[in-house]
Length: 449
Image (cartoon, rainbow, N blue to C red):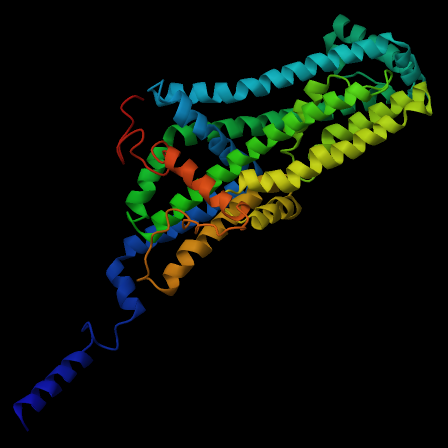
Protein backbone atom coordinates (compact mmCIF):
# COMPACT_ATOMS: atom_id res chain seq x y z
CA UNK A 1 0.00 0.00 0.00
CA UNK A 2 1.36 3.35 -0.97
CA UNK A 3 1.87 6.23 1.42
CA UNK A 4 -0.96 8.20 -0.21
CA UNK A 5 -3.42 5.36 0.37
CA UNK A 6 -2.35 5.05 4.03
CA UNK A 7 -2.85 8.81 4.48
CA UNK A 8 -6.36 8.62 2.99
CA UNK A 9 -7.33 5.78 5.33
CA UNK A 10 -6.03 7.74 8.33
CA UNK A 11 -8.06 10.77 7.31
CA UNK A 12 -11.18 8.64 6.93
CA UNK A 13 -10.62 7.15 10.38
CA UNK A 14 -10.25 10.59 11.95
CA UNK A 15 -13.43 11.79 10.29
CA UNK A 16 -15.36 8.86 11.75
CA UNK A 17 -14.17 9.56 15.30
CA UNK A 18 -16.94 11.04 17.50
CA UNK A 19 -16.54 14.70 18.31
CA UNK A 20 -14.60 15.50 15.16
CA UNK A 21 -15.89 18.59 13.30
CA UNK A 22 -16.52 16.59 10.17
CA UNK A 23 -17.97 13.49 11.81
CA UNK A 24 -21.49 12.34 11.06
CA UNK A 25 -22.35 12.53 14.75
CA UNK A 26 -22.17 16.30 14.69
CA UNK A 27 -25.48 17.97 13.89
CA UNK A 28 -28.01 20.32 15.29
CA UNK A 29 -27.41 19.08 18.84
CA UNK A 30 -23.66 19.83 18.63
CA UNK A 31 -24.24 23.31 17.28
CA UNK A 32 -26.80 24.03 19.99
CA UNK A 33 -24.31 22.77 22.56
CA UNK A 34 -21.70 25.15 21.19
CA UNK A 35 -24.09 28.05 21.67
CA UNK A 36 -24.29 27.33 25.35
CA UNK A 37 -27.30 26.62 27.49
CA UNK A 38 -27.42 30.15 28.88
CA UNK A 39 -27.66 31.70 25.45
CA UNK A 40 -30.40 29.30 24.36
CA UNK A 41 -32.36 30.08 27.53
CA UNK A 42 -32.02 33.81 26.88
CA UNK A 43 -33.26 33.32 23.33
CA UNK A 44 -36.34 31.55 24.74
CA UNK A 45 -36.91 34.43 27.15
CA UNK A 46 -36.45 36.95 24.33
CA UNK A 47 -39.01 35.08 22.23
CA UNK A 48 -41.47 35.08 25.16
CA UNK A 49 -40.96 38.83 25.64
CA UNK A 50 -41.53 39.42 21.93
CA UNK A 51 -44.78 37.42 21.99
CA UNK A 52 -45.99 39.30 25.09
CA UNK A 53 -45.11 42.66 23.54
CA UNK A 54 -46.88 41.75 20.28
CA UNK A 55 -49.96 40.68 22.26
CA UNK A 56 -50.08 43.98 24.17
CA UNK A 57 -49.62 46.01 20.99
CA UNK A 58 -52.38 44.05 19.25
CA UNK A 59 -54.80 44.77 22.10
CA UNK A 60 -54.33 48.50 21.41
CA UNK A 61 -53.39 48.25 17.75
CA UNK A 62 -55.75 51.06 16.74
CA UNK A 63 -54.28 53.45 19.30
CA UNK A 64 -50.70 52.47 18.41
CA UNK A 65 -51.29 52.95 14.69
CA UNK A 66 -52.87 56.36 15.30
CA UNK A 67 -49.80 57.25 17.40
CA UNK A 68 -47.50 56.26 14.52
CA UNK A 69 -49.68 58.30 12.18
CA UNK A 70 -49.43 61.34 14.48
CA UNK A 71 -45.65 60.88 14.63
CA UNK A 72 -45.24 60.96 10.85
CA UNK A 73 -47.58 63.95 10.59
CA UNK A 74 -45.65 65.89 13.26
CA UNK A 75 -42.13 64.93 12.16
CA UNK A 76 -41.87 67.33 9.19
CA UNK A 77 -42.95 70.20 11.46
CA UNK A 78 -40.41 69.12 14.09
CA UNK A 79 -37.51 68.69 11.66
CA UNK A 80 -38.10 71.69 9.42
CA UNK A 81 -39.63 74.36 11.64
CA UNK A 82 -39.16 73.73 15.34
CA UNK A 83 -35.97 71.81 16.09
CA UNK A 84 -33.69 74.09 14.04
CA UNK A 85 -34.80 76.94 16.34
CA UNK A 86 -35.06 75.03 19.66
CA UNK A 87 -32.03 72.82 20.26
CA UNK A 88 -33.44 70.93 23.25
CA UNK A 89 -35.31 67.95 21.83
CA UNK A 90 -37.74 67.77 24.75
CA UNK A 91 -38.75 71.42 24.40
CA UNK A 92 -38.79 71.14 20.61
CA UNK A 93 -41.13 68.14 20.74
CA UNK A 94 -43.43 69.94 23.18
CA UNK A 95 -43.49 72.99 20.90
CA UNK A 96 -44.20 70.76 17.89
CA UNK A 97 -47.14 69.04 19.54
CA UNK A 98 -48.47 72.41 20.64
CA UNK A 99 -48.10 73.79 17.12
CA UNK A 100 -49.91 70.82 15.60
CA UNK A 101 -52.50 70.59 18.37
CA UNK A 102 -53.49 74.26 18.65
CA UNK A 103 -55.51 74.33 15.39
CA UNK A 104 -57.31 71.18 16.52
CA UNK A 105 -58.12 72.68 19.93
CA UNK A 106 -59.25 75.94 18.31
CA UNK A 107 -61.57 74.02 15.97
CA UNK A 108 -63.04 72.05 18.88
CA UNK A 109 -63.59 75.24 20.93
CA UNK A 110 -65.21 76.98 17.95
CA UNK A 111 -67.50 73.97 17.39
CA UNK A 112 -68.58 73.82 21.05
CA UNK A 113 -69.23 77.57 21.14
CA UNK A 114 -71.37 77.49 18.00
CA UNK A 115 -73.25 74.40 19.25
CA UNK A 116 -74.09 76.05 22.59
CA UNK A 117 -75.16 79.26 20.90
CA UNK A 118 -77.30 77.41 18.37
CA UNK A 119 -78.94 75.31 21.08
CA UNK A 120 -79.79 78.44 23.05
CA UNK A 121 -81.28 80.05 19.94
CA UNK A 122 -83.40 76.96 19.23
CA UNK A 123 -84.74 76.78 22.78
CA UNK A 124 -85.69 80.46 22.71
CA UNK A 125 -87.40 80.29 19.32
CA UNK A 126 -90.69 78.81 18.13
CA UNK A 127 -88.72 75.89 16.76
CA UNK A 128 -87.90 74.86 20.32
CA UNK A 129 -91.58 74.59 21.14
CA UNK A 130 -92.22 72.61 17.98
CA UNK A 131 -89.39 70.20 18.80
CA UNK A 132 -90.71 69.83 22.35
CA UNK A 133 -94.15 68.97 20.96
CA UNK A 134 -92.51 66.43 18.66
CA UNK A 135 -90.74 64.73 21.60
CA UNK A 136 -93.67 64.84 24.05
CA UNK A 137 -95.33 61.58 22.83
CA UNK A 138 -92.12 59.68 23.60
CA UNK A 139 -90.88 61.47 26.75
CA UNK A 140 -92.64 63.75 29.22
CA UNK A 141 -90.21 66.66 29.41
CA UNK A 142 -92.06 68.34 32.26
CA UNK A 143 -91.86 65.15 34.33
CA UNK A 144 -88.15 64.79 33.61
CA UNK A 145 -87.41 68.39 34.64
CA UNK A 146 -89.54 68.00 37.80
CA UNK A 147 -87.74 64.78 38.81
CA UNK A 148 -84.37 66.33 38.07
CA UNK A 149 -85.10 69.38 40.21
CA UNK A 150 -86.39 67.27 43.11
CA UNK A 151 -83.36 64.96 42.93
CA UNK A 152 -80.94 67.89 42.89
CA UNK A 153 -82.63 69.46 45.96
CA UNK A 154 -82.55 66.13 47.82
CA UNK A 155 -78.85 65.59 47.17
CA UNK A 156 -77.95 69.18 48.08
CA UNK A 157 -79.90 69.05 51.34
CA UNK A 158 -78.61 65.62 52.40
CA UNK A 159 -75.78 64.08 50.35
CA UNK A 160 -76.08 60.81 52.28
CA UNK A 161 -79.40 60.19 50.50
CA UNK A 162 -77.48 59.61 47.25
CA UNK A 163 -77.09 55.90 48.07
CA UNK A 164 -80.84 55.45 48.78
CA UNK A 165 -82.06 57.67 45.98
CA UNK A 166 -85.00 56.34 43.96
CA UNK A 167 -85.33 57.80 40.49
CA UNK A 168 -88.22 57.79 38.11
CA UNK A 169 -88.06 55.75 34.91
CA UNK A 170 -87.63 58.77 32.64
CA UNK A 171 -84.87 60.29 34.75
CA UNK A 172 -83.14 56.91 35.03
CA UNK A 173 -83.00 56.64 31.25
CA UNK A 174 -81.58 60.15 30.95
CA UNK A 175 -78.94 59.50 33.62
CA UNK A 176 -77.98 56.17 32.02
CA UNK A 177 -77.51 57.97 28.71
CA UNK A 178 -75.41 60.68 30.35
CA UNK A 179 -73.26 58.17 32.25
CA UNK A 180 -72.71 56.13 29.09
CA UNK A 181 -71.71 59.25 27.20
CA UNK A 182 -69.30 60.28 29.95
CA UNK A 183 -67.78 56.79 29.95
CA UNK A 184 -67.26 56.84 26.21
CA UNK A 185 -65.74 60.31 26.42
CA UNK A 186 -63.34 59.17 29.15
CA UNK A 187 -62.32 56.18 27.02
CA UNK A 188 -61.64 58.45 24.04
CA UNK A 189 -59.57 60.81 26.18
CA UNK A 190 -57.56 57.88 27.59
CA UNK A 191 -56.69 56.61 24.12
CA UNK A 192 -55.88 60.16 23.01
CA UNK A 193 -53.46 60.44 25.92
CA UNK A 194 -51.78 57.17 24.87
CA UNK A 195 -51.45 58.53 21.33
CA UNK A 196 -49.86 61.69 22.74
CA UNK A 197 -47.32 59.63 24.72
CA UNK A 198 -46.40 57.51 21.68
CA UNK A 199 -46.00 60.59 19.49
CA UNK A 200 -43.95 62.49 22.06
CA UNK A 201 -41.38 59.77 22.68
CA UNK A 202 -41.11 58.75 19.03
CA UNK A 203 -40.33 62.35 18.11
CA UNK A 204 -37.84 62.75 20.96
CA UNK A 205 -36.06 59.38 20.76
CA UNK A 206 -36.47 58.20 17.17
CA UNK A 207 -32.74 58.70 16.45
CA UNK A 208 -31.88 56.43 19.40
CA UNK A 209 -34.24 53.76 18.15
CA UNK A 210 -32.72 53.99 14.66
CA UNK A 211 -29.16 53.81 16.06
CA UNK A 212 -30.03 50.78 18.20
CA UNK A 213 -31.63 49.01 15.24
CA UNK A 214 -28.61 49.68 13.02
CA UNK A 215 -26.17 48.53 15.69
CA UNK A 216 -28.16 45.38 16.56
CA UNK A 217 -30.06 44.10 13.52
CA UNK A 218 -29.44 46.19 10.42
CA UNK A 219 -25.96 46.16 8.84
CA UNK A 220 -24.95 49.46 7.30
CA UNK A 221 -25.40 49.47 3.55
CA UNK A 222 -27.26 46.16 3.58
CA UNK A 223 -30.57 45.19 2.09
CA UNK A 224 -32.39 45.59 5.42
CA UNK A 225 -31.22 49.17 5.78
CA UNK A 226 -32.46 49.95 2.27
CA UNK A 227 -35.77 48.28 3.13
CA UNK A 228 -36.40 50.21 6.34
CA UNK A 229 -35.29 53.52 4.79
CA UNK A 230 -37.78 53.00 1.97
CA UNK A 231 -40.56 52.03 4.42
CA UNK A 232 -39.87 55.14 6.50
CA UNK A 233 -40.01 57.39 3.44
CA UNK A 234 -43.23 55.84 2.12
CA UNK A 235 -44.99 56.05 5.49
CA UNK A 236 -44.03 59.71 5.70
CA UNK A 237 -45.52 60.37 2.26
CA UNK A 238 -48.67 58.33 2.88
CA UNK A 239 -49.53 59.65 6.34
CA UNK A 240 -48.64 63.27 5.69
CA UNK A 241 -50.58 62.95 2.45
CA UNK A 242 -53.57 61.86 4.55
CA UNK A 243 -53.50 65.16 6.41
CA UNK A 244 -52.96 67.05 3.15
CA UNK A 245 -56.05 65.32 1.76
CA UNK A 246 -58.06 66.39 4.84
CA UNK A 247 -56.91 70.01 4.42
CA UNK A 248 -57.80 70.03 0.73
CA UNK A 249 -61.16 68.37 1.44
CA UNK A 250 -61.91 70.97 4.10
CA UNK A 251 -60.99 73.83 1.75
CA UNK A 252 -63.14 72.34 -1.02
CA UNK A 253 -66.05 71.90 1.41
CA UNK A 254 -65.80 75.50 2.65
CA UNK A 255 -65.86 76.86 -0.92
CA UNK A 256 -68.74 74.54 -1.88
CA UNK A 257 -70.91 75.36 1.13
CA UNK A 258 -70.36 79.11 0.82
CA UNK A 259 -71.33 78.87 -2.87
CA UNK A 260 -74.45 76.85 -2.02
CA UNK A 261 -75.50 79.45 0.52
CA UNK A 262 -75.50 82.07 -2.24
CA UNK A 263 -78.38 80.28 -3.99
CA UNK A 264 -80.07 78.77 -0.92
CA UNK A 265 -83.58 79.77 0.24
CA UNK A 266 -83.56 82.24 3.09
CA UNK A 267 -85.26 79.74 5.40
CA UNK A 268 -82.93 76.80 4.70
CA UNK A 269 -79.36 78.02 4.43
CA UNK A 270 -76.29 76.15 5.69
CA UNK A 271 -75.40 77.42 9.18
CA UNK A 272 -71.77 78.46 9.72
CA UNK A 273 -70.54 77.20 6.32
CA UNK A 274 -66.86 77.82 7.12
CA UNK A 275 -66.98 75.83 10.35
CA UNK A 276 -69.03 73.04 8.77
CA UNK A 277 -66.55 72.83 5.87
CA UNK A 278 -63.62 72.51 8.28
CA UNK A 279 -65.45 69.78 10.19
CA UNK A 280 -65.99 67.97 6.90
CA UNK A 281 -62.22 68.00 6.39
CA UNK A 282 -61.70 66.48 9.84
CA UNK A 283 -64.42 63.89 9.23
CA UNK A 284 -62.67 62.79 6.02
CA UNK A 285 -60.07 61.11 8.26
CA UNK A 286 -62.74 58.75 9.62
CA UNK A 287 -62.81 55.46 7.66
CA UNK A 288 -65.84 54.21 5.72
CA UNK A 289 -68.26 56.91 6.97
CA UNK A 290 -66.01 59.90 6.30
CA UNK A 291 -67.69 63.24 5.67
CA UNK A 292 -71.14 61.66 6.06
CA UNK A 293 -70.68 62.21 9.80
CA UNK A 294 -71.26 65.89 9.03
CA UNK A 295 -73.21 66.01 5.76
CA UNK A 296 -76.00 63.58 6.68
CA UNK A 297 -77.00 65.31 9.96
CA UNK A 298 -76.76 68.65 8.19
CA UNK A 299 -78.97 67.36 5.37
CA UNK A 300 -81.50 66.13 7.94
CA UNK A 301 -81.44 69.60 9.53
CA UNK A 302 -82.07 71.26 6.15
CA UNK A 303 -84.93 68.85 5.36
CA UNK A 304 -86.48 69.65 8.76
CA UNK A 305 -86.29 73.38 8.08
CA UNK A 306 -87.91 72.92 4.68
CA UNK A 307 -90.66 70.71 6.16
CA UNK A 308 -91.47 73.30 8.81
CA UNK A 309 -91.57 76.14 6.31
CA UNK A 310 -93.28 74.26 3.48
CA UNK A 311 -92.13 72.06 0.63
CA UNK A 312 -91.26 74.89 -1.74
CA UNK A 313 -87.53 74.76 -0.89
CA UNK A 314 -87.16 70.97 -1.08
CA UNK A 315 -84.75 71.29 -4.00
CA UNK A 316 -82.00 72.78 -1.83
CA UNK A 317 -81.45 69.85 0.60
CA UNK A 318 -81.48 67.47 -2.37
CA UNK A 319 -78.95 69.65 -4.19
CA UNK A 320 -76.84 69.82 -1.04
CA UNK A 321 -76.72 66.01 -0.77
CA UNK A 322 -75.83 65.52 -4.44
CA UNK A 323 -73.14 68.22 -4.51
CA UNK A 324 -71.68 67.05 -1.18
CA UNK A 325 -71.44 63.47 -2.41
CA UNK A 326 -69.94 64.25 -5.81
CA UNK A 327 -67.76 67.30 -5.17
CA UNK A 328 -66.77 66.99 -1.52
CA UNK A 329 -66.85 63.22 -0.94
CA UNK A 330 -66.17 61.28 -4.15
CA UNK A 331 -63.57 63.50 -5.83
CA UNK A 332 -61.20 63.90 -2.85
CA UNK A 333 -61.62 60.33 -1.57
CA UNK A 334 -61.26 58.45 -4.85
CA UNK A 335 -59.15 60.79 -6.98
CA UNK A 336 -57.25 63.18 -4.72
CA UNK A 337 -56.33 60.98 -1.73
CA UNK A 338 -54.38 58.29 -3.68
CA UNK A 339 -52.28 60.92 -5.48
CA UNK A 340 -51.34 63.01 -2.44
CA UNK A 341 -50.85 59.93 -0.21
CA UNK A 342 -49.10 57.56 -2.58
CA UNK A 343 -46.51 59.54 -4.49
CA UNK A 344 -44.03 56.65 -4.31
CA UNK A 345 -46.57 53.84 -4.46
CA UNK A 346 -48.91 52.53 -7.10
CA UNK A 347 -52.07 54.68 -7.12
CA UNK A 348 -54.38 51.67 -7.44
CA UNK A 349 -52.67 49.89 -4.54
CA UNK A 350 -53.08 52.96 -2.30
CA UNK A 351 -56.74 53.23 -3.28
CA UNK A 352 -57.29 49.56 -2.38
CA UNK A 353 -55.47 50.04 0.93
CA UNK A 354 -57.76 52.93 1.90
CA UNK A 355 -60.84 51.02 0.75
CA UNK A 356 -60.10 47.56 2.16
CA UNK A 357 -58.30 48.71 5.32
CA UNK A 358 -61.44 49.84 7.18
CA UNK A 359 -63.34 46.79 5.92
CA UNK A 360 -60.71 44.33 7.19
CA UNK A 361 -59.52 46.02 10.38
CA UNK A 362 -62.29 48.40 11.47
CA UNK A 363 -62.11 52.11 12.25
CA UNK A 364 -58.30 52.18 12.40
CA UNK A 365 -57.99 50.46 9.01
CA UNK A 366 -57.53 53.82 7.28
CA UNK A 367 -54.16 54.01 9.09
CA UNK A 368 -53.26 50.30 9.30
CA UNK A 369 -54.17 49.47 5.68
CA UNK A 370 -51.57 51.82 4.14
CA UNK A 371 -48.99 50.66 6.71
CA UNK A 372 -49.45 47.03 5.68
CA UNK A 373 -49.30 48.06 2.02
CA UNK A 374 -46.01 49.92 2.51
CA UNK A 375 -44.34 46.98 4.29
CA UNK A 376 -45.50 44.48 1.65
CA UNK A 377 -44.73 46.72 -1.32
CA UNK A 378 -41.19 47.56 -0.25
CA UNK A 379 -40.52 43.93 0.74
CA UNK A 380 -41.51 42.81 -2.75
CA UNK A 381 -39.48 45.60 -4.35
CA UNK A 382 -36.29 45.34 -2.29
CA UNK A 383 -36.02 42.11 -0.31
CA UNK A 384 -37.51 39.59 -2.74
CA UNK A 385 -35.08 40.43 -5.60
CA UNK A 386 -32.20 40.14 -3.10
CA UNK A 387 -33.47 36.72 -1.98
CA UNK A 388 -33.61 35.58 -5.58
CA UNK A 389 -30.13 36.93 -6.42
CA UNK A 390 -28.05 38.19 -3.47
CA UNK A 391 -25.31 39.34 -5.86
CA UNK A 392 -27.60 41.70 -7.75
CA UNK A 393 -27.09 45.49 -7.29
CA UNK A 394 -28.79 46.75 -4.12
CA UNK A 395 -29.39 50.42 -4.92
CA UNK A 396 -32.90 50.46 -3.49
CA UNK A 397 -32.88 53.68 -1.46
CA UNK A 398 -35.31 55.33 -3.89
CA UNK A 399 -37.44 54.25 -6.86
CA UNK A 400 -35.74 54.17 -10.26
CA UNK A 401 -35.64 57.40 -12.20
CA UNK A 402 -38.46 57.67 -14.77
CA UNK A 403 -37.54 57.40 -18.41
CA UNK A 404 -37.90 60.52 -20.60
CA UNK A 405 -41.36 60.95 -21.99
CA UNK A 406 -41.95 60.46 -25.66
CA UNK A 407 -44.14 63.01 -27.45
CA UNK A 408 -47.78 62.42 -26.61
CA UNK A 409 -47.14 60.34 -23.47
CA UNK A 410 -49.15 61.05 -20.32
CA UNK A 411 -47.04 62.76 -17.66
CA UNK A 412 -49.32 61.55 -14.84
CA UNK A 413 -47.62 58.13 -14.89
CA UNK A 414 -44.27 59.58 -13.83
CA UNK A 415 -45.26 62.58 -11.71
CA UNK A 416 -45.64 60.43 -8.58
CA UNK A 417 -42.05 59.18 -8.54
CA UNK A 418 -40.62 62.57 -9.49
CA UNK A 419 -42.47 64.37 -6.70
CA UNK A 420 -41.30 61.82 -4.17
CA UNK A 421 -37.67 62.12 -5.27
CA UNK A 422 -37.82 65.91 -4.90
CA UNK A 423 -39.31 65.61 -1.42
CA UNK A 424 -36.73 63.02 -0.44
CA UNK A 425 -33.88 65.25 -1.59
CA UNK A 426 -35.16 68.12 0.54
CA UNK A 427 -35.74 66.05 3.69
CA UNK A 428 -32.86 63.57 3.53
CA UNK A 429 -30.79 65.71 5.88
CA UNK A 430 -33.61 66.23 8.37
CA UNK A 431 -35.40 62.87 8.82
CA UNK A 432 -34.01 61.52 12.06
CA UNK A 433 -35.14 57.96 11.55
CA UNK A 434 -33.43 57.72 8.17
CA UNK A 435 -30.13 59.36 9.09
CA UNK A 436 -29.36 59.35 12.78
CA UNK A 437 -26.73 62.02 12.50
CA UNK A 438 -29.36 64.74 12.10
CA UNK A 439 -29.71 65.41 15.80
CA UNK A 440 -26.91 63.43 17.41
CA UNK A 441 -24.20 60.94 16.49
CA UNK A 442 -25.28 57.32 16.19
CA UNK A 443 -25.65 55.66 19.56
CA UNK A 444 -25.09 58.87 21.52
CA UNK A 445 -27.46 61.18 23.32
CA UNK A 446 -28.48 64.51 21.92
CA UNK A 447 -26.09 67.05 23.48
CA UNK A 448 -28.82 69.72 23.53
CA UNK A 449 -31.32 67.57 25.45
